[in-house]
Length: 217
Image (cartoon, rainbow, N blue to C red; front, side, top):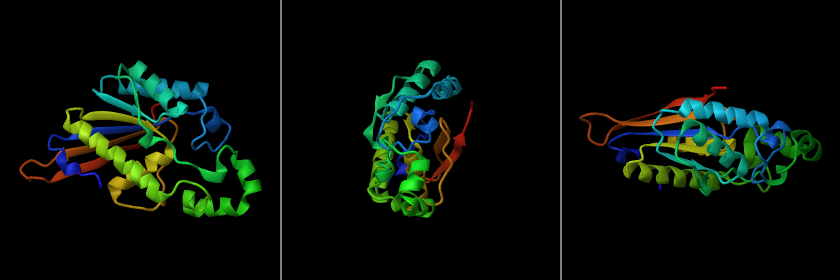
């Protein structure tokens, strides 16, 4: 079921952060479900984001269980005095199929035709990669869990995820089912979605992406 933001009669704030630079990002490796720790730069990025979140009244933190995201969330929580992160598999990175574990240079040499399709179709053009349908389902599941959390009183949440998953968390709110256009998602980029009721308008509500790929390092 598509997320129903009109249920949030008291409003809510939803923050999303892409993980900090991992060793795989540093080496231009497509990671997908493969894991790698943060680089030193990634840890510094996470600390900067943690300082930014200090005092913003975040009452729940969720993170992909992959190391690069969970480590980022842990650093943000520790630095910003936020709640400890809870692992959530719905915001794990997409499966990047035959590109997984390979550098972009090797991909272009080994899979030239697939690389060309990737430029116009994104992951829909990559064999064995996770489908749009699957990604939308996971994004919707996460949104619905956040809405339920807000209805229980946790109205300011932070989810630490991945560049691919961020795309679908945004696209679900825009009602699109296509990879294109893409949204920039830098390492430790901050995204902020707000829902506010409209006084005197019954179930009407205002929603807006106030920050997209905001960086603080």
